[in-house]
Image (cartoon, rainbow, N blue to C red; front, side, top):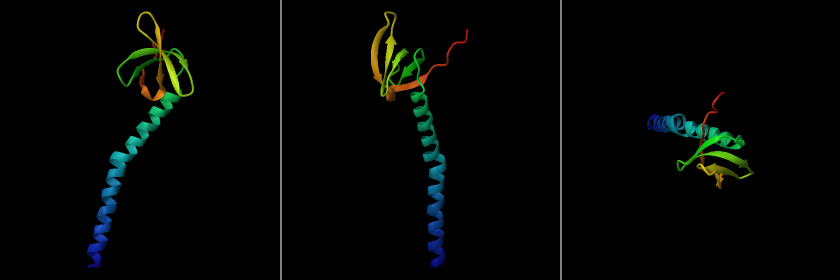
Length: 92
């Protein structure tokens, strides 16, 4: 009986370890990268919001950014958490 209990505990530890290394750890790493990307936004960056809007950063403030949209350069504020990706800069 004690061996069965030990094996059950070992099995649960193994299951938790698999979940941690396959699900939890990669998600935390991705969240950390997103946070760093959002903290390092600067004026002129071309970004895509999580809603699919492509724009340029006009102004960066503590908790939000102002994006320039469209050909007439309309300026709209967005929360930083709404920025999904930063497009790479074109080298000239």
